[in-house]
Length: 200
Image 1 (cartoon, rainbow, N blue to C red):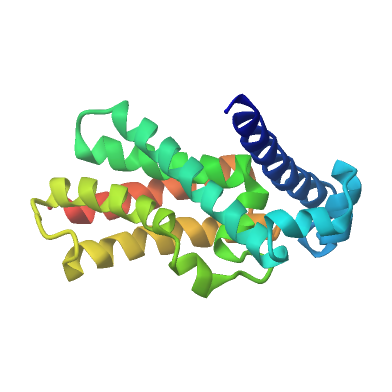
Image 2: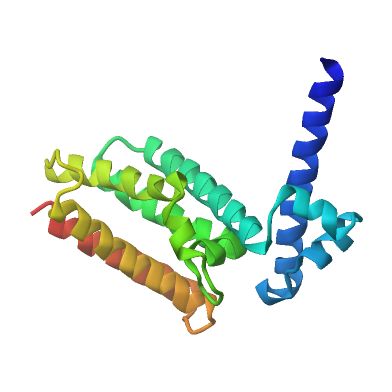
C-alpha cells in the first residue's frame, strides 16, 4: 500500500512539474514558445513521458486555465470576506480581480485568450470557470435585493463590470495603457460608478 501511495505522489509531482515548467517557459519566452518538447527539456524527461500525463498542449493549457480559475476564485472570496457591506465587498473583489490579472499575467492570458488563442469552448466546460461569476452575482444580488442570480438584471450588471475591468486589463497587457496611477483611478471610478447605479 505504501508503494502505491508513493507512486501516486510521484505521478502528482511529475504532473505539477510539467505545469510549472510550462509556466516558466511562457514567462521567459511567451506562449508561442511553449511545446511538449521544450517542456520535456526543462524537466529533463523525454517528450513521450509528457504525453502520459497530458494528451497534447491544449490539455496543458486547459489545466493551467482550470488552476487559474481556482486561484482567482480563492482571491475573490478572500477579498469579499474582509468586508461586511456588499458595496465594499464588490469593490474589493474587482480590485482583487485586477491584482490577480497582473500578478498572474500568463494565467490570465490563457484563461481569457489575451494575446493568444484560447480553448474557449473547452474553458466553458470547466466548472471552475463559473466560480468568479457566481461569487460576484451573489454579492450583486444581495446589494440589489435580487434573489434570482440568473436574472437579466444580475447578468447585465456582471457583464458591465467584467467588460470594463477585463477591457482595462487587456489594454494594459498589450501595453496600450497609461500609468499605474491613472489605471487605478479609472478602475476605481468605473467600479464606483457601476455600484452607484445598483444602489439608487
